Image 1 (cartoon, rainbow, N blue to C red):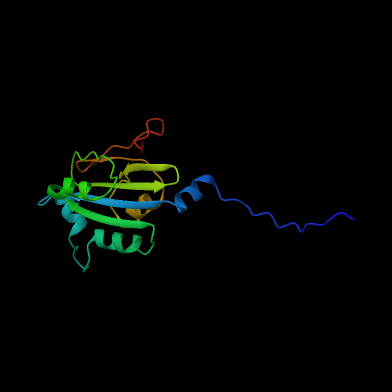
Image 2: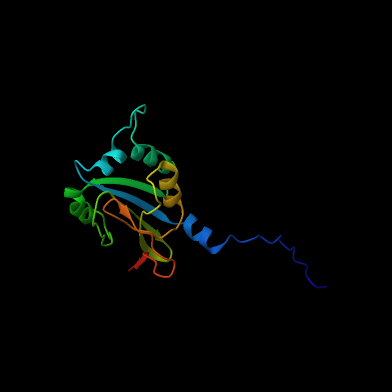
Length: 154
């Protein structure tokens, strides 16, 4: 008599992009400069608020253990990079520069922020999704889908 095997119900697999991002470790870094107006808007509390936009951003993301958020003054950026093992090269051409390093099963990549206006919803959306973009010197230039600014790193 043939042996019967119970069939387990099929599980629907997640899309590849969702499963990839759910396993990633993400470090978001703000490189800022003293006396930079755009930087001060991010790191100093605004009127009618006791916390800065960056503090709200950091607190929102760090509830999730796969995120780490740093802010580094431009004069300390090179020593910060040296202190982080396996930190990829970063292109800082203006301030503020916001970038994220994603580390997953497919290696590392770096993404620069260009989500438009620097608001909490825009920053959170950018940090949580795998979008490629770049910010330079307070001015933004979106990258095209063909010429992505995402870089795969060794």
